[in-house]
Length: 492
Ligand code: LRH
Image (cartoon, rainbow, N blue to C red; front, side, top):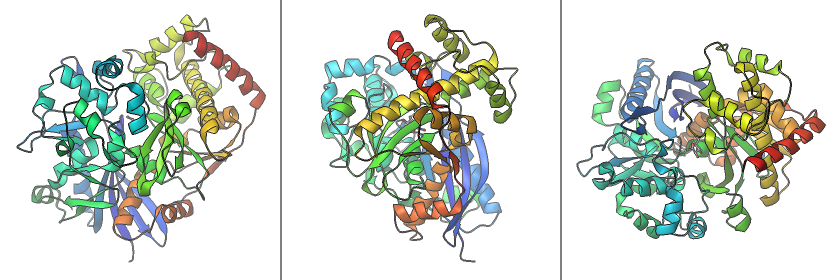
């Protein structure tokens, strides 16, 4: 048996999973061991993640792997970006991490530019898009509020690094996840001293900077005893989920565009160097650190978030996605259009009401019931995709003739077709578990079983079937897009 087994932990903002990846004969196979919710905890006026619950879920998955007696080569953890845990001098975690949807950062960016470092300077240093929840602004808001976890922090660990620390006792600062903080300079590939200082930190407050495919440490004896596993190494993968996902795009050469589709939709290209210029600044595009020195030049688009939130509110909608979406497709097209990236959808107390308010305020048909609302969400997303794809085309140095959609959202055939129609380009959908595959491939790189990113991509392309969507109905979508632009501009 020349097969190798890898254990991946992939945590998104709404759910997480543990997965066994098997690599053999230049093919990869996945098996999901566990899947669980990742819930926001609201208490004392704040939103937190439950880091201990996530840790326990990882332990549960590891136990299952041990029971199966699979010779696990290594473990790798990837999570959503920007959030972090404060660690005290005694090595203990100082309270659960604040979640990026917490409104404590509202208005903080503007104040930061005013009082700390100018906006343009921050962009020139980092090349990272401005989002109020980037770690830099979270830290600024926490300092300002006198957050006692931060005041007592010896180290700051980004979420994947914090979980790896809980498993190994070793503290690192993995490069791809650090790049989401808006404190890293992509040229030096180090955290920028000036930005760190602006929030009262220095490089010693972080673990050693490591690249993906480097060993962090071995499972502690405590974890070995709990799980029944031996001394298995934990590898720094692309700790940022989007970094792992884009590493897994089954493209043949560098000239491709991608949409990593989950709670967020991340649309962009892969480049050698960061693209930092006036246009990228004005369009608020980001340059996140990728594997093997690549850069992800992309923009965050609100993804399945609105849909997921509505699903929690609907009491009468079919539980199955396909059934629910089939009902939506029976509704008339383009009755109501929203801008999914409008701030009113960031974290409203009722998503359904937010959508209805948006439509009322913009003088449109107010959607009622899950089918109409669902139709509105997916059409609007595809229209926003088209807008961002247009920006991307202006800035890419090569023509964008195809869009690879990866991640859980790539299972949504209706949305895939809408996207092809709206953008007027061919869409290739899959793999669904892009993030987990990228995670596993980086472990396989650490063990010497794959050589580089193109070797990984060949193996992935060899292992999965892509679904192809060709543009149709483009005239109808052209008209709808003109209305989308009008509505978005009017709303401001
Ligand atoms: C997607 C993601 C995205 C970040 C956001 C916070 O899961 O990592 O790349 O911008 O979460």
